[in-house]
Image (cartoon, rainbow over all chains, first blue to last red):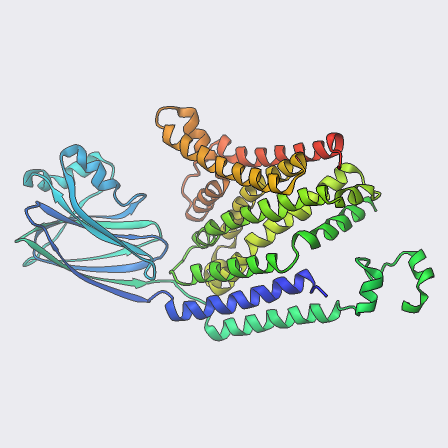
Length: 235
Length: 251
C-alpha cells in the first residue's frame, strides 16, 4: 500500500531537517574567522586588499603592517572589482591577483597588486570623488594601519596600501553578527514532531488491503450508492 | 459540484504524478541538500537564504516537470488514461485545469517549498525576521517554474509521445537559457535585447524586489521585467487549455 502523500512529505522533511542540522553543526559558519597573510608587492606601486561579504553581517577588524600610506573604501556595493576597473581610466591597473571564497565566513577575500604612478596613487581620494565612491585616507602610525568596519550582506571593503618596503603583512578578524541557527536539540525535536505527524496521518488514513482492493481510489467516506448496495459486507 | 469533480480528478492524477519512489527520492535529496547549503554559510537575510536554496532547486524542479509532468502527461495520452479522464463528467477545460494542477502546479509548489521549509526551520531567526522577503523570492521562483511547466504540458499534449515530450521539453528549457545568454551578450549593442534579457528570469526580478523592500532602496523594476514571465506562463496555460478544449484528440 502506498503511503499518503502528506505523510511521505512530512517524513521527508523530518529526515532532511535532521541531516541539514547535523551537517551544519559539524561544518556550519564560524562565529569568528581570522586570516593572516603577506603580500609581496614586487615592483608594484601598491597592494589592494579586498574583503567582500556575500551573505553575512559582521564586524571586520583589519591590521596592516609595512605600509607607508593607505586608502580605503568601505560600504562598497555591487561587484567588488568595480572600483579597480573604474580606476583603469586613470592608468591604475591591477596586476597579479588572487581571490578566495570562504563559504563558512560568507566572505570573498583577496588581494591584487596595483600598478600605477605614485603620484596618481596619492591623488586617489580626489579621483574617487569623480567616480562616485568615496575613498578615504587611513591614518598610518609607524607603518601600522588599523581599520574597523561593519560589513553588511553584499557590501565590501577595499584597502589600497602603498608599501614601505616590498611586503605587506595583514591580519584580519571577521566576527559574525546577528547569526543564529536552530540548535541540534531543537532540530531533533522538530524532526521528531514531523515524523510523529507523518505516522499519525499514515495510521489514521490506513485502509485494509481488502478495502483497498475493492474500493480502489474511492474514498471510504463517500462511496457510490450502487457500490454500497452491491458490497454490503464492507459497510 | 463541478469544482469538486475537477479537484477529485486532480487528486487522482496527482497521486500518479507525485508517486513514490521517484518523487520522494527527489524531494528528500533537494530538501536535505538545500538545508545543508543554507546551514553551512552565515546567511543573515531571508531573501538571500531563499535564493541560495532555490537557485539549484529550480533546475531540478524543471527536470522533474519535464519528465514526470510533460512525459508523464504524454504517457497518459498514449496509454489511454487520458481517454478515461475525458470520459468523466467534467468539461474539457476542467480536465485541462486538473491536469495542469496535478502535473505542474502541485509538484512545482512542493519541490520548491520543501527545501525552503527545511532551511527556514533551521535558520528560523533569519526567516522570522523577514518572512515577506522569503515569500516574494519563493513566488518568483515558482512563477519561473510554472512558465517552464505550462510550456512543457503544451509540448506533451501536442506531441502525445512520452520520449518526444521529454526531449522537446528539455530542449525548450535549454533554448530558454541560451536565449538569455545570447540576449545578454548582444545586450550592449541592442537596448531592446538588454531589456528582454533582464526580464527572462522572474526569480531574480523577485529577488531585487525583495531586497528593495527590505532595505528601503528605490525599486528599479521595469514593466517588462514585472510582467514578461507571468504573461508567458499565463499564455502557455491558456494555450494548453484551448488546445485541450478544442483540438485535442486522444489516440
